Amino acid sequence: MGVIKKAFISPHPPIVVHEVGKGEEKKAVATIEALERLAREVAKIKPSTIIVTTPHGPVFQDYIFINHNDVLSGDFRRFGAAEVKLRYENNLKLAGEITRLANSQGIPCGGLDGNLIKRFRISEELDHGAMVPLYFINKLYGGFRIVKISIAAMPFKELYRFGRCIAKAVEQSDEEAVFLASGDLSHRLAPDGPYGFNECGPEFDGRLVDYLKVPDREAILGFDEGFLEEAGECGLRSFIMMFGALDEFEIKPEVYSYEGPFGVGYAVAEFTPASRIEGETLLDRLDRREIEEMSMIRSSEDPYTALARKSLEMYVLNGTIIDVPEVLPEEMRSGRAGVFVSIKKHGRLRGCIGTIMPTRENIAAEIIHNAVSAGVHDPRFDPVTEDELDDLVYSVDVLGDPEPVSSMDELDVKRYGVIVRAGRRSGLLLPDLEGIDTPQQQVAIALQKAGIRPDEKYTMERFEVVRHR
Image (tube, rainbow, N blue to C red):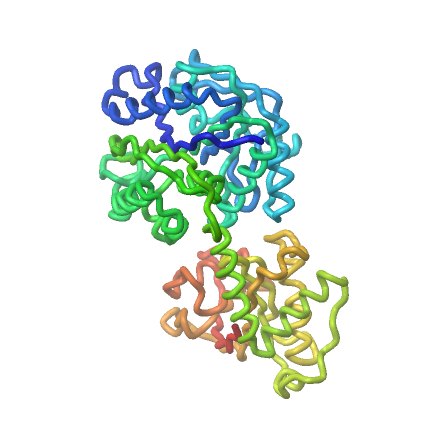
């Protein structure tokens, strides 16, 4: 049976590579000394495989890229040191098993089609996120294979679950592995840094380092994404994958170092799996809470959202459009209105389609058809699959009659949606959307959706909605 012997968090500033820094690396001496210590620990373990997660490989919104080339190589030419080259054999068997297990859990991952790589000019070389820590390890230990995995902009819980898949794949092998989670902390620690200063930067670094010292895995997954964007963080998703791989174990942590030269936070830390956790792990607890929360949502559905859900479920499971049920409130069977159906998964939009004006015989029929369209015909997303149905949350907006407005002063983003028109082009934005705080933002997005330039002549209308959740 295979095992992850230790896991490490490592930053990846190329400047700490001597051939790149040419003396400037001395400004990050604490980080260099910690990375040298990390390398010594790896050399003691003599792992057969090092699993590396990095935020600087090909990163996608909803797909985890695992490199499946026979050999993985790269150099530091981008940083003025082309002579520094790294080359490793890929552990294709382990990479394939991680891919299989993750996909069986509904987590899309794997390699990339050659045509896609060419079309989007995607590099499959080792990126500096992987190479910087491997550079230090290479000085003391070699002969190991690697598995290189890129982060994805998925919900944190899914990345954590993916880490569990990595651990299961290792257990089913005969590998003695090390997990190397590459990532810097905040990039916004100083006004003269590459990304400037934001007060959320030092706060993020302070909180994260404190969480690593425990480690408090639940707190690490609990960061608000808006706060993270302000903080300019780099490696959190990489770290979450690593902690997911250790989900079933008590962990002995040690933070080797933290410093913030160059306006960027660097932390080096070691995590040793100890005894297996008896009873509920963090992932078990998160799954249980989600089931309880979804049960509450389902039990509180009104006829509008229940109809939207049943319509999409029937279509996905059987390929049929349901008839308008007999038992519905009178306004749904006799009233007519434009309707938007929005679908979210784990708090993120999964589909949204609607009609500005009524196109069906009643509101119920409008909901049925728009729910199906939102789930399988929204061009921004792949069609909803059967294994996603239990994770979806629905809302239904029934639109009031639009009325013309002559200026943005007549708009209120919380109360009114907006429609913009220029000739045959039109764009609509619903009211009370997260992140939309001003009429100017609301109109700008509606114009963009319609393909109308801001300097063109266009008209505006506002409308109210009755929102069902």
